[in-house]
Length: 428
Image (cartoon, rainbow, N blue to C red; front, side, top):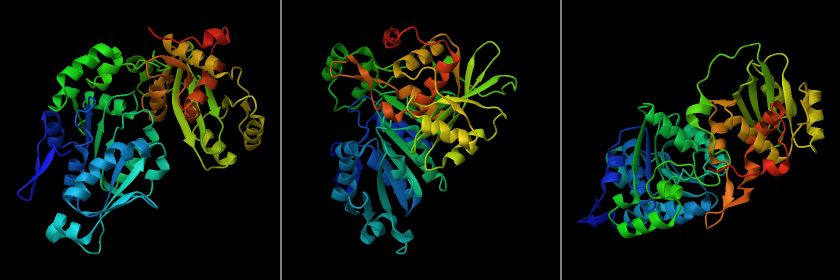
């Protein structure tokens, strides 16, 4: 951090390398700094945010990391070094909520004649594993650190967008590449010409402080996919990805008008906090098009049924839930939507059915179903320190739409031949 910025003659002097300078000069609303490890991402974020605060004026701003532990490890120390240690603009408190509050003197120094003593400036710190932590503020800009990690969910990104909607605030994303979550979706939109997005992508060694020898050592000692993603900031399919056969150019399709004669089926995953469903239309030749997603909490069963039926055909075929969830099925039936017990409830067999449908190009997802696509791109088997893929799925209990999808696809396809064959890893 001290290498990036220094105080000379009472002024803060910034020493950006080429990658940082490109991000600094970008005028886009959404700036993605995708860089190799130790490329100077996190140290850059506080300076970008400070400029946004100076430009946008008094109010609330956001700093968000995937988890609080990662926030405490990286983004928060970098932020406090600049805002609290060097510039002495205010004070950070961790309880009851994590925030940095500007002092009146700090605000006067930062805003000069435009300072209004009746207003207050705060930087609020949130974490993406709990989108609810991001819902309370109306913010003017946001810095998202390590947003490419699997735990930074699509729902968190949507919550941040809502917080910025009134001011149409800018966003800086600083991250290495880990998986194909919402960051990959933004990258795809940029490649397709979306002018609101700018991508700055560079290797670790663009940072002059990163050793070329270390870079070359990593090239020879880590898996190719990991080196490409985490040192060169280039997209690859990571080891452990469950649906590694999913091809965005094939399986993600633009929305089109569905034939009213096609069969409609909905897969349901029950839950008090996470009620999820995916809707499929089955074409005359057997192709399955997922055209709608549903993920809500805090509603009654009757409300869920109303939402699920909204805009659908009068007859809606539904399947889902674990074998033990008969009470949920009875409640839905009483509310007007019969839900059948799935023919295949075993997770491994269900995954095998979905995988086969993708591989055989029989299963397609409409490209505006952002949360489902995010789950597909981050659903992974655990990988140990040596890069070996394990049998367990990381955070399996958080992938509610994919649970609904496997209930649905298992119903529409032939069952897996055996649990043994269903649990085989599909890696090239």
